[in-house]
Length: 368
Image (cartoon, rainbow, N blue to C red):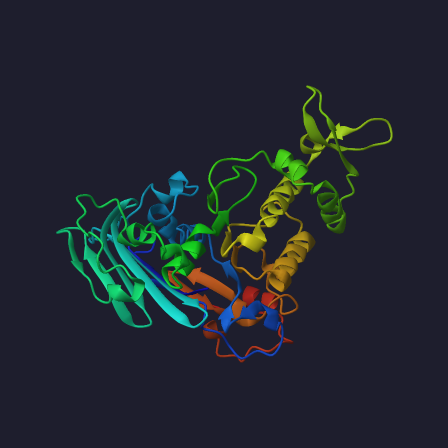
């Protein structure tokens, strides 16, 4: 699991922003929101342009140089903070894999230009590499069986960690294997308007075709009914003879996708991605409920927070989700001025299960 993430001088984060999943309170309710003593489901609020979306891009920056997965232009454009005099962005990830603590940090001058990279395992330096002069501090490379590799790199677009992970046997290494598996299975996605996603896989699926081929039509139909939408789905031919999802009506069937509202399409995208949630290691859903009715947004949040094993972050403006019936105060965060702070740390009041978090929020109780 990701334990601590830090970023500095990236996009709108001029100053260091710290996200600490282990910074929790001792609440006795909704304990499913915490797994392995870390926040497992997090909801982030913030005014427009405070960095909610950029936080997701920052966390997923690691996928740019460690794995060959889906990327988007937003990860590359306007990379460094425009107000900073520093010529590089800094990132640090601390992972906890069954008690093994791995910290991976690096600096970049651009999205795919590494300046510095280092790896620590349980407090021991494994390596530190300076791409400016191609020099390596080998540290304790013996711990991962990588002490005899060639570490001369003429370019700064090749990660040392990725180089090490490509050698035979490293996939089974309890340190390198776990870290690379985690990064390989990270997933970021946003609304159906552009169907953008980062990580997890590469390429583009046609959503309807994928649902049909996976044999999930009946499951999808039940999913929609639970959300209050009865489309009576079946598989048939569309107007051009292509296999498609149809919505059955009294006189004739209609193409499901053509008659679906923006909210239904967004929900379809969520269902499509949920088919792979059991394989995901980390999930970031940006503005997940942009087209949802507030009751549907609550239903989705309740469903994934109570069932998902994967760590998940949602960003939203929907204050009805600020509810102790769904999560708990230490799962709700506000981002402001490059700071990410949980609700209990934004008030002197001792927040309890009976408190109406939405009401307190609208009254200005939580000031970042």
